[in-house]
Image (cartoon, rainbow, N blue to C red; front, top):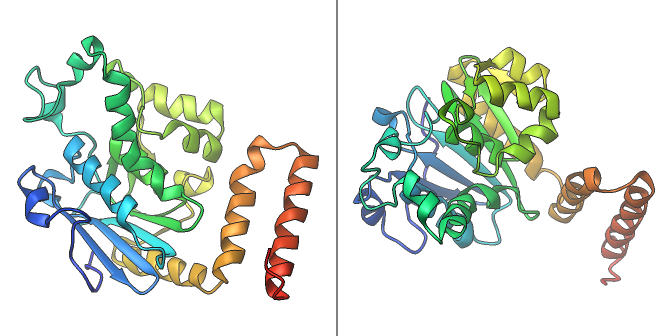
Length: 274
Protein backbone atom coordinates (compact mmCIF):
# COMPACT_ATOMS: atom_id res chain seq x y z
CA UNK A 1 0.00 0.00 0.00
CA UNK A 2 1.15 3.51 -0.66
CA UNK A 3 1.71 5.91 2.22
CA UNK A 4 -0.59 8.92 2.62
CA UNK A 5 0.72 12.42 2.06
CA UNK A 6 2.26 13.73 5.26
CA UNK A 7 1.88 17.22 6.61
CA UNK A 8 3.49 16.41 9.96
CA UNK A 9 5.51 13.65 11.52
CA UNK A 10 5.42 14.00 15.25
CA UNK A 11 4.95 12.24 18.54
CA UNK A 12 2.50 13.97 20.89
CA UNK A 13 4.45 14.81 24.00
CA UNK A 14 7.50 12.90 22.75
CA UNK A 15 9.98 12.92 19.92
CA UNK A 16 9.65 10.02 17.44
CA UNK A 17 13.24 9.10 18.30
CA UNK A 18 12.07 8.44 21.85
CA UNK A 19 9.44 6.05 20.56
CA UNK A 20 11.94 4.25 18.37
CA UNK A 21 14.28 3.72 21.33
CA UNK A 22 11.60 1.42 22.75
CA UNK A 23 10.98 -0.32 19.44
CA UNK A 24 7.94 1.82 18.61
CA UNK A 25 7.64 3.18 15.10
CA UNK A 26 4.53 5.22 14.48
CA UNK A 27 3.67 7.98 12.07
CA UNK A 28 1.08 10.66 12.72
CA UNK A 29 0.08 13.03 9.95
CA UNK A 30 -2.59 15.71 9.87
CA UNK A 31 -4.22 17.08 6.76
CA UNK A 32 -6.95 19.53 7.65
CA UNK A 33 -9.71 17.71 9.53
CA UNK A 34 -8.16 14.28 8.90
CA UNK A 35 -5.41 12.64 10.95
CA UNK A 36 -3.68 9.45 9.85
CA UNK A 37 -1.98 7.08 12.28
CA UNK A 38 0.33 4.52 10.66
CA UNK A 39 1.96 1.50 12.28
CA UNK A 40 5.48 1.45 10.81
CA UNK A 41 7.05 -1.83 11.83
CA UNK A 42 6.39 -4.01 8.77
CA UNK A 43 9.42 -6.27 9.31
CA UNK A 44 7.75 -7.47 12.54
CA UNK A 45 4.28 -7.50 11.00
CA UNK A 46 3.52 -4.51 13.23
CA UNK A 47 3.72 -6.53 16.43
CA UNK A 48 2.48 -4.57 19.44
CA UNK A 49 3.94 -3.76 22.84
CA UNK A 50 2.99 -1.72 25.91
CA UNK A 51 5.30 1.03 24.62
CA UNK A 52 3.26 1.17 21.42
CA UNK A 53 0.06 1.34 23.43
CA UNK A 54 1.41 4.25 25.47
CA UNK A 55 2.29 6.06 22.26
CA UNK A 56 -1.17 5.44 20.78
CA UNK A 57 -2.81 6.69 23.98
CA UNK A 58 -0.64 9.82 23.81
CA UNK A 59 -1.80 10.45 20.25
CA UNK A 60 -5.42 10.27 21.37
CA UNK A 61 -4.82 12.76 24.17
CA UNK A 62 -2.99 15.21 21.90
CA UNK A 63 -5.20 15.27 18.81
CA UNK A 64 -6.38 18.84 18.16
CA UNK A 65 -10.08 19.59 18.24
CA UNK A 66 -10.02 20.38 14.52
CA UNK A 67 -9.63 16.68 13.69
CA UNK A 68 -12.91 15.06 12.67
CA UNK A 69 -11.74 11.82 11.03
CA UNK A 70 -8.87 9.54 12.06
CA UNK A 71 -7.54 6.93 9.65
CA UNK A 72 -5.61 4.00 11.13
CA UNK A 73 -3.38 2.06 8.74
CA UNK A 74 -0.27 -0.08 8.74
CA UNK A 75 2.74 -0.53 6.51
CA UNK A 76 3.63 -3.92 5.06
CA UNK A 77 1.72 -7.11 4.37
CA UNK A 78 -0.02 -7.33 7.75
CA UNK A 79 -2.03 -4.83 9.76
CA UNK A 80 -0.77 -6.30 13.04
CA UNK A 81 0.16 -9.83 14.03
CA UNK A 82 -0.74 -9.06 17.63
CA UNK A 83 1.28 -8.76 20.81
CA UNK A 84 5.04 -9.16 20.44
CA UNK A 85 5.83 -12.82 21.09
CA UNK A 86 8.51 -11.81 23.59
CA UNK A 87 5.67 -10.93 25.97
CA UNK A 88 4.88 -14.64 26.32
CA UNK A 89 8.41 -15.58 27.39
CA UNK A 90 9.50 -15.63 31.06
CA UNK A 91 11.69 -12.58 30.51
CA UNK A 92 8.97 -10.69 28.71
CA UNK A 93 9.51 -7.52 26.70
CA UNK A 94 12.57 -5.58 27.95
CA UNK A 95 11.52 -2.75 30.24
CA UNK A 96 7.97 -4.04 30.67
CA UNK A 97 6.32 -6.07 33.41
CA UNK A 98 6.17 -9.72 32.24
CA UNK A 99 2.60 -10.89 31.67
CA UNK A 100 2.70 -13.67 34.24
CA UNK A 101 3.94 -11.25 36.91
CA UNK A 102 0.69 -9.29 36.55
CA UNK A 103 -1.02 -12.08 38.49
CA UNK A 104 1.13 -11.38 41.56
CA UNK A 105 1.12 -7.61 41.18
CA UNK A 106 -1.23 -5.46 43.25
CA UNK A 107 -1.26 -3.05 40.31
CA UNK A 108 -2.42 -5.56 37.70
CA UNK A 109 -5.80 -3.92 37.18
CA UNK A 110 -4.21 -0.49 36.84
CA UNK A 111 -1.59 -1.79 34.39
CA UNK A 112 -4.16 -3.42 32.11
CA UNK A 113 -6.38 -0.33 32.34
CA UNK A 114 -3.42 1.69 31.09
CA UNK A 115 -2.98 -0.69 28.19
CA UNK A 116 -6.66 -0.29 27.30
CA UNK A 117 -6.33 3.48 26.91
CA UNK A 118 -4.70 2.92 23.52
CA UNK A 119 -7.88 1.20 22.34
CA UNK A 120 -10.62 3.42 23.76
CA UNK A 121 -10.20 6.94 22.42
CA UNK A 122 -10.93 5.97 18.80
CA UNK A 123 -14.68 5.89 19.57
CA UNK A 124 -14.90 9.24 21.29
CA UNK A 125 -17.93 11.26 20.14
CA UNK A 126 -16.19 14.18 18.46
CA UNK A 127 -14.54 12.14 15.70
CA UNK A 128 -15.04 9.09 13.48
CA UNK A 129 -12.24 6.56 13.19
CA UNK A 130 -11.62 4.22 10.24
CA UNK A 131 -9.26 1.24 10.28
CA UNK A 132 -7.75 0.20 6.93
CA UNK A 133 -6.87 -3.45 7.52
CA UNK A 134 -4.80 -5.76 5.33
CA UNK A 135 -3.30 -9.19 5.86
CA UNK A 136 -3.25 -10.54 9.39
CA UNK A 137 -5.05 -8.77 12.25
CA UNK A 138 -4.54 -11.14 15.15
CA UNK A 139 -5.30 -10.76 18.86
CA UNK A 140 -4.24 -7.24 19.80
CA UNK A 141 -4.24 -6.43 16.07
CA UNK A 142 -7.86 -7.57 15.77
CA UNK A 143 -8.78 -5.54 18.85
CA UNK A 144 -7.06 -2.43 17.48
CA UNK A 145 -9.16 -2.72 14.33
CA UNK A 146 -12.25 -3.21 16.52
CA UNK A 147 -11.33 -0.05 18.44
CA UNK A 148 -12.27 2.04 15.41
CA UNK A 149 -15.80 3.00 14.45
CA UNK A 150 -15.49 1.60 10.92
CA UNK A 151 -13.32 -0.97 9.13
CA UNK A 152 -12.30 -1.08 5.46
CA UNK A 153 -10.55 -4.35 4.64
CA UNK A 154 -8.33 -5.66 1.89
CA UNK A 155 -9.47 -8.84 0.22
CA UNK A 156 -6.54 -10.69 1.82
CA UNK A 157 -7.51 -9.78 5.40
CA UNK A 158 -7.47 -12.48 8.05
CA UNK A 159 -8.89 -11.65 11.48
CA UNK A 160 -8.35 -13.97 14.44
CA UNK A 161 -8.75 -13.72 18.22
CA UNK A 162 -6.20 -16.15 19.64
CA UNK A 163 -6.16 -15.15 23.33
CA UNK A 164 -8.44 -17.97 24.50
CA UNK A 165 -6.21 -20.59 22.89
CA UNK A 166 -3.35 -19.19 24.99
CA UNK A 167 -5.35 -19.55 28.19
CA UNK A 168 -6.14 -15.82 28.27
CA UNK A 169 -9.06 -13.56 27.32
CA UNK A 170 -9.26 -10.58 24.95
CA UNK A 171 -8.70 -7.68 27.35
CA UNK A 172 -7.90 -4.70 25.15
CA UNK A 173 -11.48 -3.37 24.96
CA UNK A 174 -12.33 -5.55 21.96
CA UNK A 175 -15.08 -7.79 23.35
CA UNK A 176 -17.87 -5.19 23.49
CA UNK A 177 -17.47 -3.88 19.92
CA UNK A 178 -17.15 -7.45 18.63
CA UNK A 179 -20.42 -8.46 20.32
CA UNK A 180 -22.12 -5.29 19.08
CA UNK A 181 -21.03 -6.02 15.51
CA UNK A 182 -21.64 -9.76 15.18
CA UNK A 183 -23.73 -10.79 18.21
CA UNK A 184 -22.73 -12.81 21.30
CA UNK A 185 -23.01 -16.27 19.72
CA UNK A 186 -20.82 -15.44 16.72
CA UNK A 187 -18.38 -13.54 18.94
CA UNK A 188 -18.06 -16.55 21.26
CA UNK A 189 -17.42 -18.85 18.31
CA UNK A 190 -14.76 -16.52 16.84
CA UNK A 191 -12.98 -16.04 20.17
CA UNK A 192 -13.40 -19.60 21.41
CA UNK A 193 -12.06 -21.28 18.29
CA UNK A 194 -9.48 -18.66 17.33
CA UNK A 195 -10.29 -19.33 13.68
CA UNK A 196 -9.56 -17.05 10.75
CA UNK A 197 -12.27 -14.68 9.52
CA UNK A 198 -11.68 -13.55 5.95
CA UNK A 199 -12.83 -10.53 4.00
CA UNK A 200 -16.03 -11.92 2.51
CA UNK A 201 -17.27 -13.24 5.85
CA UNK A 202 -16.21 -10.04 7.62
CA UNK A 203 -18.47 -7.96 5.39
CA UNK A 204 -21.30 -10.51 5.53
CA UNK A 205 -21.46 -10.64 9.33
CA UNK A 206 -20.97 -6.89 9.82
CA UNK A 207 -17.41 -6.97 11.09
CA UNK A 208 -16.19 -4.90 8.13
CA UNK A 209 -17.97 -2.16 6.22
CA UNK A 210 -16.45 -3.12 2.88
CA UNK A 211 -13.65 -5.15 1.33
CA UNK A 212 -11.54 -3.96 -1.60
CA UNK A 213 -8.42 -5.13 -3.46
CA UNK A 214 -5.29 -4.48 -1.40
CA UNK A 215 -4.06 -1.89 -3.91
CA UNK A 216 -7.23 0.15 -3.34
CA UNK A 217 -7.30 -0.03 0.47
CA UNK A 218 -5.85 3.40 1.29
CA UNK A 219 -7.96 5.13 -1.34
CA UNK A 220 -11.14 3.42 -0.16
CA UNK A 221 -10.52 4.43 3.46
CA UNK A 222 -9.74 7.99 2.39
CA UNK A 223 -12.90 8.14 0.28
CA UNK A 224 -15.00 6.99 3.23
CA UNK A 225 -13.36 9.63 5.41
CA UNK A 226 -14.08 12.32 2.83
CA UNK A 227 -17.73 11.27 2.64
CA UNK A 228 -18.04 11.59 6.42
CA UNK A 229 -16.44 15.04 6.35
CA UNK A 230 -19.14 16.18 3.93
CA UNK A 231 -21.69 16.11 6.75
CA UNK A 232 -21.86 19.05 9.17
CA UNK A 233 -19.72 18.21 12.20
CA UNK A 234 -22.33 18.77 14.92
CA UNK A 235 -24.94 16.71 13.06
CA UNK A 236 -22.50 13.81 12.71
CA UNK A 237 -21.50 14.05 16.38
CA UNK A 238 -25.15 13.94 17.47
CA UNK A 239 -25.92 11.06 15.11
CA UNK A 240 -22.94 9.04 16.34
CA UNK A 241 -24.01 9.57 19.94
CA UNK A 242 -27.56 8.43 19.13
CA UNK A 243 -26.33 5.27 17.46
CA UNK A 244 -23.72 4.45 20.09
CA UNK A 245 -26.23 4.75 22.90
CA UNK A 246 -29.10 2.96 21.18
CA UNK A 247 -28.19 -0.48 22.49
CA UNK A 248 -28.44 0.63 26.12
CA UNK A 249 -31.77 2.44 25.68
CA UNK A 250 -35.32 1.18 25.43
CA UNK A 251 -37.35 2.02 22.34
CA UNK A 252 -39.07 4.88 24.16
CA UNK A 253 -35.79 6.15 25.59
CA UNK A 254 -34.26 6.16 22.13
CA UNK A 255 -37.22 8.11 20.75
CA UNK A 256 -36.73 10.67 23.52
CA UNK A 257 -33.01 10.87 22.77
CA UNK A 258 -33.80 11.48 19.10
CA UNK A 259 -36.20 14.29 19.98
CA UNK A 260 -33.70 15.96 22.29
CA UNK A 261 -30.90 15.71 19.72
CA UNK A 262 -33.10 17.07 16.94
CA UNK A 263 -34.21 20.02 19.00
CA UNK A 264 -30.58 20.85 19.76
CA UNK A 265 -29.81 20.75 16.05
CA UNK A 266 -32.83 22.91 15.18
CA UNK A 267 -31.93 25.49 17.83
CA UNK A 268 -28.39 25.59 16.50
CA UNK A 269 -29.54 25.99 12.88
CA UNK A 270 -31.93 28.73 13.97
CA UNK A 271 -29.13 30.54 15.76
CA UNK A 272 -30.79 30.15 19.14
CA UNK A 273 -27.89 28.40 20.83
CA UNK A 274 -28.59 26.49 24.01
